[in-house]
Image 1 (spheres, rainbow, N blue to C red):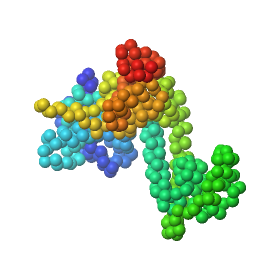
Image 2 (spheres, rainbow, N blue to C red):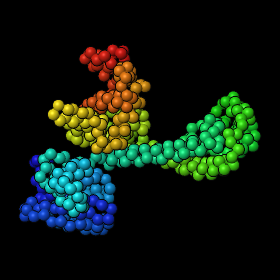
Image 3 (tube, helix red, strand yellow):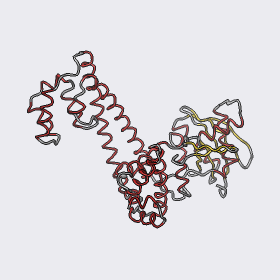
Image 4 (cartoon, rainbow, N blue to C red):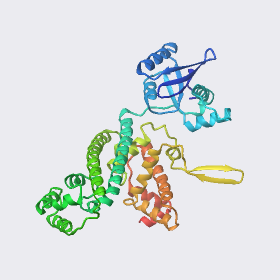
Length: 414
């Protein structure tokens, strides 16, 4: 940033329908303020005008987002250097200048411009990852939303079945599975299931790859069971909910499988895939998410501490006088923090040193999530080194290094 010469500094406060902006021209020292409508035609016309006015010269652009229609339009212009500003940073800057907490879009655009113009030497420009990495990142996030939607549906269905048909929770299997959808579609109520013949039930379970003995045991349970309720209102409402939810669960399962296939295809073709595929128990879901969290730009993070702070895994320290407090970071990409947190949990079952660390921390009566954050912090240091050097993770080699340094976790693991 210090070595880059900008012809103008542009601050944009985005909105759904129009964007207010303030642009400072370095040559004239003047600031122009205006707005642009959020339509593809208006945006391209405005950006074309900027390119003509500053032909061959760079413009520093400050805005409060890293995705969306505005960001997508700006990132395609080679003469624009984007600086995403954390909304919390802009809010603090606004409150410092306007203690009344007044807020206005044109004012925010002006503040963004002044932030990048006056304090740009402390900021890092946005550098796009490859198309494959950006696609992996968005697919991973969208897949997670689909999984959460499926979980919400299965929770709703579980609550209903507990009232009207609780035995289905055992006989149907996991509610997110195809078997459960087939079971509830065929027999949405206890009365419907009682009408099924023994051969029908055995055929159903055999088609879903259960042994004959297992199927006969389930049939015996069905024949000996009694209804949980005789309340026709509960039974009818439960039947309607089953009919409504099962179709959506099937559609979500198909969509998630489609996402999984595309993510696996992109991940397998990525140059950094061997690094993240080597992680114990990362699996088909978390390995691509970890790759996307680090990205392609090896200069993006100067140290593992940068990754830990960016992701929100590293705690935040506040010190005033003789008081020092430790807080969890709130302003961070939640999906990336969740990715590292989930991987730390899964690594305990297969990584000997991770399990030793977890068990030792539990013996100190630490909370589970605090332990997982500390473990994630250690994994980030390992991952950062592997990513920076483009080498795969080697559990045996890492244990040797821990033993050489006298780590108690390595001795416990051994």
